[in-house]
Amino acid sequence: MPDTQIQAETRQTIGTTATTFDQARSEQFMGRMVEFMNGAAVSMMAAIGHKTRLFDTMAALPAASSQQVADAARLDERYVREWLAVMVTAGVVEYDAAACTYRLPAEHVPFLTDASGTNLAVTAQLLPVATRAMDRVVECFHKGGGTHYHEYPCFHACMAEESAQSVVAHLFTAILPLVPGVLERLGQGIAVMDAGCGQGRALLAMAERFPKSRFVGLDLCEDALDAGWRMARERNLTNVFFEARDLSDFAEPEAFDLITTFDAVHDQKNPAGLLRGIARSLKPGGTYLMQDIGGSSFLERNLENPFAPLLYAMSTLHCMPVSLGQGGAGLGTMWGVELAENMLREAGFRDITCHRLEHDPVNAYFVSRA
Image (cartoon, rainbow, N blue to C red; front, side):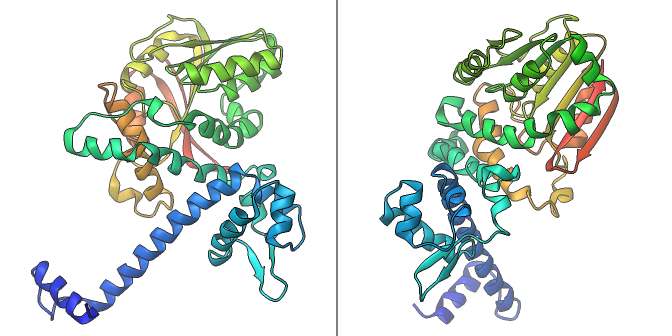
């Protein structure tokens, strides 16, 4: 069908006239949709590049043929060649047509390899994992309800990798120092809990560094905690303990000097109940350190946030439905700093301070006392 006929039918369908239909705007939007689809495709392939360590392999190679890349990575050449075609046409990898060689530019390496601490290919894994439950989410659009964590294979492993570079790598230099004097107190020996700890990477790092302190990690998912126990045994850590618990209405009255949550509150069944439980579980003078998504509670204030489409998509596919699937509040990933501060106050916290850290453009860090 000729383009002019399609455009005419489109105008008729949307009830406009030729004089009000902005052809340039229509064509511009079509171009953006192509960019979105290409971006999604590249993101999927970047996740594969991380999982197969192709980016790390190429970072250590000079210009190389697809066979040389495949051999170095110990992968099948035909698959590597097709993956390289994606990377070349996306502008991620350079291609010398005369020599039939590929090269990963040095300027791209910091954002694609594990050694950098800013590996965006790690983050690129999250969306493909979330889409594992896409058909189930589509069903929820029609019938309501939600999903469950077991419907997202490898989710906890991906989140642990993300935590390793966004939290653990900066834990002792930027994050914990937000709590005045806490490093010294950890060295002397205090009681610490991490709620919604997942595999417990941050908790394990603290337990290893501060043997005089006692650490407890709580999470709903036993499979994530199994990985935490395994790593604790491998490191011979006896001052860390993990327990599978529903955190909806828990409380350990005045049991902990420091409680942390890292990207864990917004997708809980009962976030308000969790915050109240944390407030009750702090000893007098104790501190709560919460890292969570640093967007706004108001859609219009997120229009300039470069991560907003991704975060809202993750909310639709994972964070909101896993809460709703437990009969929960379904706050969503972008519950926002405004609502977070209000909920902290309602839970009984005071002296609430919101921090932004240079290494982490996505999250906000709240320090408060009960």
